[in-house]
Image (cartoon, rainbow, N blue to C red; front, top):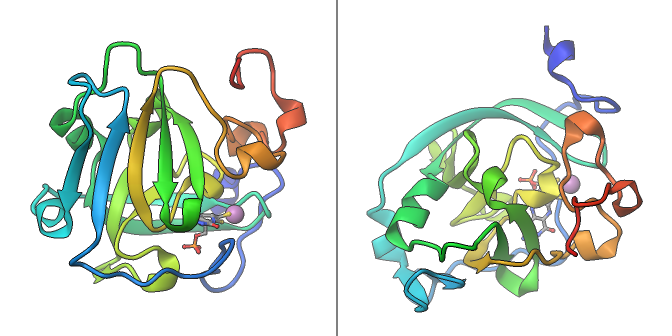
Amino acid sequence: MAESRLPPGQYVPRGLPVVHYGRVPPFKPASWDFRVFGATASGEEHGFAWDEFERLPRTSVTADFHCVTKFSMMDLRWRGVTPATILEAVPPAAGVRHVMIWAEYGYSANLRTSDFTAPGTLLATAFGDEPLTAEHGAPLRLIVPHLYAWKSVKWVRAIEYLVDDRRGFWEERGYHNVADPWHEQRYSYQEEPGEGPA
Ligand SMILES: Nc1nc2c(c(=O)[nH]1)N[C@H]1C(S)=C(S)[C@@H](COP(=O)(O)O)O[C@H]1N2
Ligand SMILES: [Mo]
């Protein structure tokens, strides 16, 4: 059964790998904020302090997770805030079609708004029944189960609304702008017209 759920070229390892570029940032609740900026409907940036973010409603998602280095993890359960909650709290301008997710230390990943609002995409604060651990992205990470996992940004600090698409950290370094594992969209040379920024 699990096999039919495995995208092409992927395998399921033992254990739960930890994968990231650079260091694990410390979480300091007093100075932590979550910013929404760029093409907002009001033209203003909006910031959430940690206690404000904690008051947003929670949802659970169970989903598989596919890393471009070819491991997949099945049936991971996350709890967190839906992108719809953020888009409602801070509406984007009419022309917004993409978002950039920003993490600590400048890591970023771009997404189409359709991927950001897809069922399963979640701003997670908990894994299973426990708060996220530092190495898995505490206090806040994005989960985009239907795209390669570099889009599932750990240590999220901001979302930028984009009218025109821009490449994030790995998308600038040769990885596919869309990153659909079912179509093995691993590398930027595979991009078809319209899949990358103009
Ligand atoms: N901020 C940040 N988020 C990141 C990364 C990173 O380097 N920095 N790596 C990505 C990659 S390539 C993968 S496979 C997943 C791994 O998540 P995990 O360590 O929780 O298994 O995190 C993603 N999110
Ligand atoms: Mo990855």
